[in-house]
Amino acid sequence: MNAPTKIETGTMTSKGQVLIPKAMRDAAGLVPGRPYKVAISDAGKIEIAPLGFGPEDADERVRRMRKGILAIAGKFPNPDGLSTDDYMREIRGNYEP
Image (cartoon, rainbow, N blue to C red):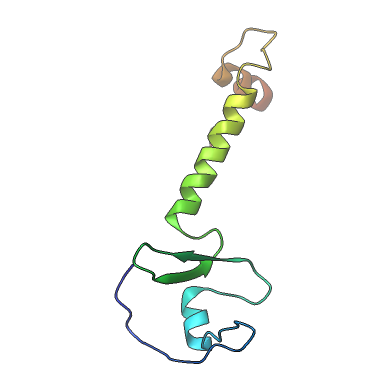
């Protein structure tokens, strides 16, 4: 985690609620009604970030996509025995982007 460039202070409510200043919410990309994640490091630092924006989230998406692809790989045999490129040429013609 990078060193903070600005520090704000506040007080937690009796219900455990913490106000994140608007400038910091905006800088972090936190939006009302959108999911976020809270993490704590071994050093006790708390990090709040929008869900789906960190490198761990990207790694998890890639893992899920690969798992999905492997789950269907080989389940739809090509009855004509065409390669993917040949099949795409057949359905698209000789289209070149």
